[in-house]
Image (cartoon, rainbow, N blue to C red; front, side):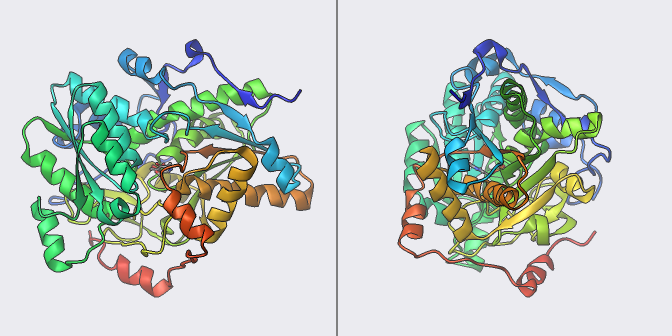
Length: 452
Ligand SMILES: *Cc1c(COP(=O)(O)O)cnc(C)c1O
C-alpha cells in the first residue's frame, strides 16, 4: 500500500518560526517614513501594529522566534496539517513526477491565514489592545482575523473590498458570525474612503482602499491596532509553520523537493512554505527551485518594477522597497481568482532580485482548468488563489513527461474554494476570459509611484 498522507502528532508541531531575514545573503532594504524618507524604527511601526509584530518585522538577527505557548495551544486545534502525495493527479497527468501538497485548507476557516491571525491577535491582547482592524479582499483574512479576535476577546472591524463583498457574499456572514463589524470599502466612514468615492463614485474597491480605511481607523481610535494578513515580513514569519512541518513530513516520505510552488498575493503562503526549504539552499548548498505563481492579470513579480511604493491607495503606509504595479493598481473586474494586490512584500522582492526564486504568470483559464482537474482527482475544491499554484505544478509535471524525470514537486494548497463557488460557476458557464495587461497599462499605472 502506498502511503498517501503524512501526519505529525501534536507533540511534533514545530515550536519556533523561521525568520529568513537572519540568513539572507542580501538583507532587505528598510521601510521608509513616507514624510521624511528616513528608515522606520520598530517604535514607528508600533503606532500601527502590535509592538511584538513591529519588532519581528525588522528583526534581521534572530533566525528562530519562539511561538508563544498560548498560540501553540490554538494551533493544536487544527495543526499539524497533512502533507499529501497527489497520486490521483499524477496518474491523470501521466507524469513520472512525484507531486506533494501541503493541505492548509483543513481548518474550519479554510485557509492558511489563521496561522498569522492567531499570533497577531494574541500579541495585541497581551499588550493591552482592545480593538483590531484590518482589510480583506475575498474575505479569508477577514474571516481568520474575526475568529482569532473572538478567541482572544478583542473587537474586530473589517473593511472588505466592495467588489469582493458582492462576488463572495458568504464571507461577510462568516465574519459577522464571529462577531466582527464588516464595512465595504471604499466607504463613507473614513476620510480616505470619502476622498476615493468623491474622485470615483463607482470605485469597486481594492486592497489598497481597504488598507487606507483600516489604518485610518486604527490611528484615530484609542487602543486599536491594525493587522495585516499578507505582504509584511512578520506575516510570512508566522506562516513558516507550514514549511517547517512540511520539511518533517517530506522526510517521513523519504523525499526532498526539487521544486517548491505556492500561489502569490503578497507572499505569506509562499514564504510560509518556501523559506524553511530555501534555508537549505542558503546554508547547505541545496538547489531547490522556488516558483511563485501569480495571475497574468496582476503580474507584479514578472512585470512590476522594483521601487519604494506605498502599501495602500491613500499613501498612509510606510514606503516599502518591493516589486510593484503602482499603489493605485486596480485589477480588471473580470479577474475572479483573487491575488489582486499590487505589491510583492519586501523579503520576496529582495530574493527575486538576488535570483533565489522566480515568479510565473498563470492565465485565468489555465488556473481554473487546473483547479477543476485537482478537484476531480484529489476530491478537494481548491480556493481560486490556490489554483494558480496547482497550475504551475501541473506545468512542471508536464515538463517531466517530456524529459522522463521523476522530479519531486511540492506545492501549497493554501485554502479550499467552497465559499468561492460563484467563481467556479462563472468558469463552468464559460463566462471567464484571460486578461493580459498591455505594457502601456503597466507603465501608466507605475507613473504614480512616489519619486524618492
Ligand atoms: C490570502 C490568500 C492567498 C494570498 O495571500 P498570500 O499572502 O500571497 O499567501 C492565497 N491563498 C488563499 C487561500 C488566501 O486566502
